[in-house]
Image 1: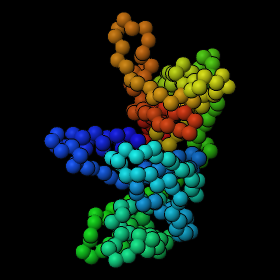
Image 2: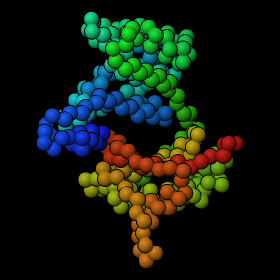
Image 3: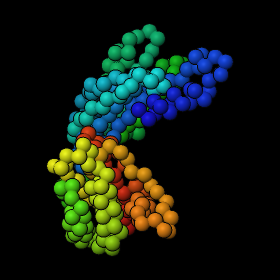
Length: 287
């Protein structure tokens, strides 16, 4: 939806003031988010062909995704779909130039793509090259792009998660549990910054993440040890937090500023029941 708005703004900026209706700009899009903890992938598309999913045995499928209109036409909203993927699955994202040809239906191009991708013995590089070589028209009638990504999952000992009631008193409990988990992982040196990050994110979720003010709503905390140490806090709210730059006389507004200083990067994203705010800390090479 944000990309759709951006394309519309770009179109308006490029328009001839004397003939604004003659300027058009549109693009198709496929957007995917993969969670290596739950092995789920959430995807949405805007007029783009669906991705191909290659399972570990080489079986190729095209998931049934809501279509959506191309970006820039203001014909949203856009809907998403979530799928669970086996570890070692391959996602194939591509432009329509790979499967379209003037003399054949697009379904025939997708059938050819399915056959070209069904070679599990090849490396990703070789599979990518051979697929493009097999399907690309000569001379090419459109740009051709193919992106292959293989999924991995995290083991249970790399993840710790908890649920808390939306009560200010739980911030201390969340800090204690996070510190205890870091000790189990041998990351005691990150206890102090992690305590502060957990405290600020959980407190923000309690204050600003009540959603429809249902008292039964809970706050989720998840720690992930991978290439980074990731702290995630989920709540029922849909408004994204904003970084403020408080004055020295201000008594509030320093939470996300502290998170910014203590983490390598942080961000937020929508989830089905609200939003999730995350912060990454760098791990030493030995971890």
